[in-house]
Length: 298
Image 1 (cartoon, rainbow, N blue to C red):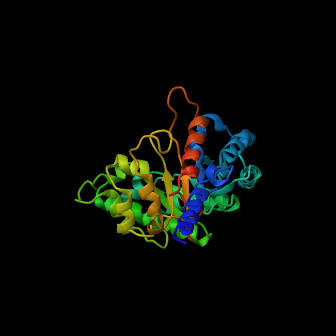
Image 2 (image 1 turned 90 degrees about the vertical axis):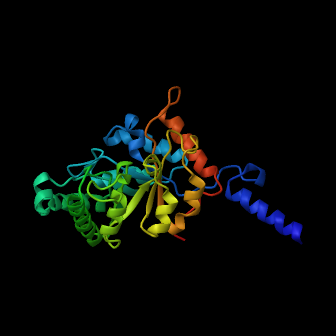
């Protein structure tokens, strides 16, 4: 009986990883998003995005995060047309990166009413585009505590606007968020996590940039459980190749983090490879790794 149980467990593990030895010809389909910034050099705009979207779907990606919003359009398309193009490729219109910095005057006064007006059109457009998450990908650097608190108040206000439209609002880090506030003995990222309302602001941790900032993603998951609804899964180039990011530990603690979806992002490609080569190897790594779940939030 013990041998039978071991055999069953081994077969289940192999099947979960899409191992051909288990009789599975193709890797298991998993929920793996892709940040379209990764393919910016070939993506184009308008109808030109369609063949690239199809290529990404064929590689095993299942959802997209946009990074091309401007003046009510996404990659030059009306929001409904963008959503249709994404879905035509067999992908989900999951999330988007948009930036609206508060002005120097707003930062000094603490009144960011004018910047909030910009969000009305932005949120409405992405509501039509079908996204579930809107993310700010960066903010001003080298802030003191007073100015950083104003930014946090701004994010809370934007998050409330998004929530009213049924969309979740988050912030995406680079490495500088793991520097200290200029006049406090506290990291910017920790200050932001403490001064944003979990009801209105989540965090999309970019695990690569966290490591570059000498931070440990799992420590943040444990310290601020449930705050990280999205993760940017990134490496120096191909995901899983450099060895500098402990992806297994990150995925094993995804439930603690509160992860609802992952987004693969590639900054570029090494000499001798195309961007699609890197996108394929990254997808293959995630599809073939046992520790990467099929779905999230279950």
